[in-house]
Image (tube, rainbow, N blue to C red):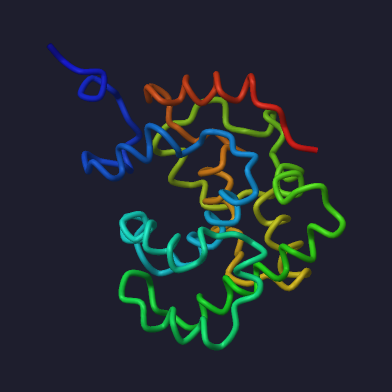
Length: 205
């Protein structure tokens, strides 16, 4: 008897690796309104720059431990001693610029929360109009979609606010992962599940 997992049709990017398949089936594209999860993903997307997502995914638990489970307030208070600790942590990506960017972005997130009801409410304001999205998402179409007008606008606004490692491509990857867009390709089993989750999702305001 074939299990649901074995029978699932998935997006081509996740291949057959168990790490990728689980992430694809349970996380990627499902709408998120939790500030901690959004901040975590933003930081991890920054750390991914120049690396594969699989590398980051396999280090995610180590990142969570190293960065106080991505609690914005706690990370915003990290200082030189924490930077030294993180540079010595073999479980994460030891890149000073990316480490300092994560701490900086926590501080900028804290500032943003002084005027916004939540980090999620801010990010979801950049959700694309569904009418602007491609009618059919084939692998060929998806390969041409590394950025969008909305991810470019989000990137520009964040940079203006002093955030780092938040380029348009990185922000589009964040939008894909956090459900602001549903980029599961046509025929993917999870695409319909994401669409169903989006129908009952309450967009944060």
